[in-house]
Amino acid sequence: MDPAWITAIVALAVAVAGLGAWGGRWAVRLLIGTHEFLTDWPKMKAAIAGLQEEVAYIKAETRPNGGNSLRDVVHRTAEDVAEIKAEQAAVRVRLDLFDANRTGREDK
Image 1 (cartoon, one colour):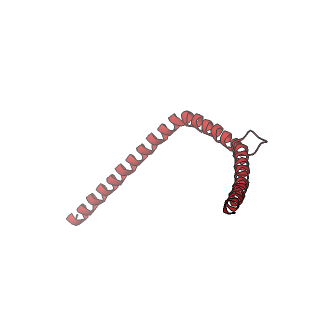
Image 2 (tube, one colour):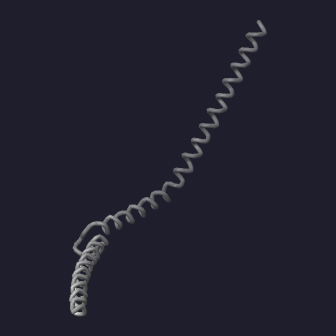
Image 3 (cartoon, rainbow, N blue to C red):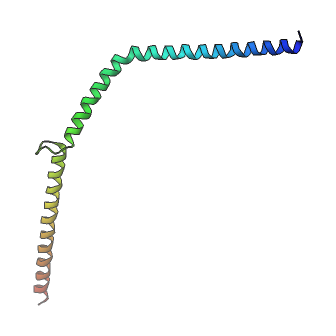
């Protein structure tokens, strides 16, 4: 047999063995990762359930429900602030009128 053919066959065998080793290593890593995931799944499932409860609570707080939710409190606070600003503007107008009247009296 020609030495070039022997070299080609050996090179092909080494390449196939390398691919086999790489594929085997990949398969082992996949199996180890799958095993670790399945081992941790009950903990992950419990954590997901806890997160779902927290998200449900937060969603409930952001929906109006007649006075008890955070959203209702924010709306009441905003209304109170708007009312205070309106009252303050009215007081400012009255104060300006008072100052104008006083200045007018002092000038006479």
